[in-house]
Each structure stands twice: as structure tokens, then as C-alpha cells.
Figure 1 (cartoon, one colour):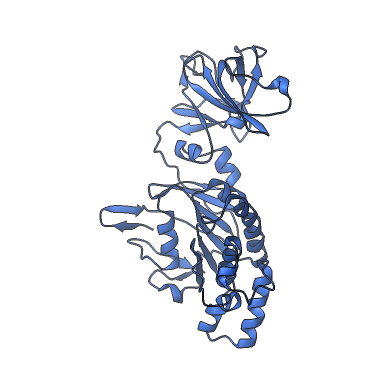
Figure 2: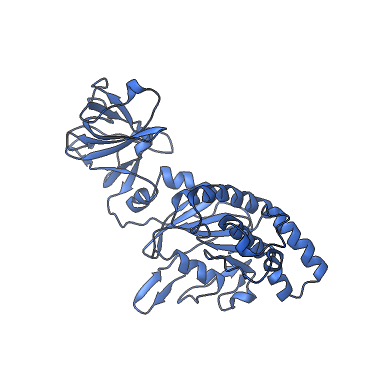
Length: 369
């Protein structure tokens, strides 16, 4: 599916398949095409090319109200003159559902989202988190095949957002409805999604389970978008061994057999939390995956310390170290050794814009979108 606006190609030939009951997150920076993708699924935009299937039915040309899909927007869009119960029941009344059934389903949905007893209140009497729950209940009460969520937590403060992540995942598992969740917040996506896709420039650069995408990203963009990442400037010597500019050797293990290997035309990525920072020169740097450096900054963060370390080749490594004791914490200007396990590094394509083919759906569940 693709979508163009005049000369701009907002969504560029993506292929996406969701399983029934799956929590799927579209993740990426502003302007990457994730919201446009969601709007096409919801019927608010027509694709320039491609088709949209829902439960095997082609719904590409159907308007939003004829699709078995509901949307929760960032603004919530609650009716201020209606009670909470009336807001939740709005869609059911439009469908002509019997009053007794409306009351029963509305009460059940308010209980599900933790707002039992709030039915007579008005939106202005609720907190931001409670308003979001009302918007969610209003969408879920129609029992759609797919629920679309467009950055629904963007207006919440950090503490409420964290608690709502847990609640939203619980609700999704309980109702068993497919969720397509759009966000630019990687923590939201990784904490809730069964699978996620990282978009960039209208294309999907990587797709899979959150742990796999984080630990083994497909491209440098994905590696750097999902948290911090050190990109090592490695080259191959005459014997085919990866080496840093100071001559230190680098080994990377494959996922298949965990044996150290070298692969041509690649770069090596390392997450800061995978690095081990040792004070002094206790670790010999003739061994692979060990380099010496000088601490530039050491920022105390409570549970951990964040280091910036100047290396012998002139680069800077970022490392996170758990604060186990005061004697292990290095100070600015101190000499340290940075080491890592071969299995914690990951190979990246040598070309920054190389985009691998997206992984297929492994679930045997029925396809709904």
C-alpha cells in the first residue's frame, strides 16, 4: 500500500499483516507515515495504490462508518454536554441497539476500564487519564474487529502514562480485539506490543517482536531510534578479522550458533547497557572486545551511572553501569577498560539506508487486517 500527497510519498509500498487479537505498534519519528497508514486503515484516507483487507473482505473504498473499525485519537473527542455513560453509549445508539442492551454493555465496559460508578459524571469532572479510559470504552463497546489508537497517551503526564500502558495491555488481552497502535515513544511500543514495525521515510525498516528488534535491529536507523546505540567504526584486516582503528579486534556472535564470526561489509552496534566498565587496566586489551579509554563524563542517575568514554581511536563510547557499590564507580578523567560479550554486538548493513525484507507473520491466528 502507498499514499502520495502531491509530490510527497507519505507511505511508500508497505506490506502489513496483523493477526486476530494481536497488539501491533507502528513506531517512528514525526512524518514517517505511521499516522497516514492508520488513517488509511480507518478509512479517513484513500490509498494511492494497494488494498486493505479486513477479515478477508476488501474494505479499501468503504467509508469509516461501514468498516468494523473504531479509532481512539489523542484528543479523545468526548462530548462535553454528555455524561460518561452517554459518551460510551453514543455509537450503540447510532446503531439502534436496544436500550437495555446499551445499559448492560456500557456498564460492563466502564467496569473493564476501571470507571465503574463514573457513568453520571461529565468529562470536565474527570482527569486526563480517566478521559482517555472513557474514549477507550466508547470505542471498545462497539466490539470492532480492529481498534486503531493514534498516540492516545500523548496528552498524559509521565506517571499516568506508565500506569495506562499496563492497563491498556490488560484490557486488550481481556477483550481479544486487534489493536493497531501508533506512537513515536519506543518505551510505549516495546512495553505493550506483541510485534512492532519501525517506519522511516514512509517505509518499514524493521518489523518483529520488540526484544528482537531492540537486540538485533535490521538497520542503523532502527538501532539508534530504539534507545541509545554505539556504532563501532570497524574494518577488516588482511586476515579477515574485524578491527577498530586502534587495532583492537572485534568479534560478533550469530544468533544461530553463538560462534564468533566476521561478516564482510558490515558495521557493529552495541547497546550502552551491554558494556562493562572496569576501573584501571584490569582487563587486557589484547583480547577481543576490550578497549581502553578515559572517562569524559559520569552522570549519576540513581540506579545506574551513565558514562561517556573517550577511546584511543578518538571516538566516544556511551555506557550504562548499575550502581552496585561506590568503589566500582569511575570518575571523570579516570582510565577504564570497556569490554563486552561477543553475543551483545550486532551486525548492521554497511549502507545506512539498506532496508531488509520485513519478516512474515508467524502467528497462525486468522488475518484481520
